[in-house]
Image (cartoon, rainbow, N blue to C red; front, top):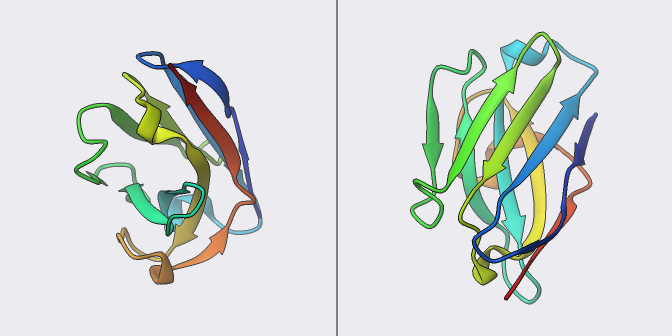
Length: 120
């Protein structure tokens, strides 16, 4: 099970940190990914982190602004979002999979999503 939290309303240029708490299997054995879906748009990849936390990969649209980290002792992965833009408004989902990947099909468990709204 994956449960996201930390979404909300923030002004453009601001920051927000999302959390995703996992349960049900050995957390460190699995890569975690973040995806987002804006109204009327397809779900898109945001970033991913390996099970150990050593390797990360980001979408070009968030590179340099977003940071993924994980605390395997707490079974939690984080998405730190800085310099937020209006275009970052979306429902954000965390997902768990066997290896870091950019395609959603590579992940077998998904959270329910948390809304992030960036205002001007």
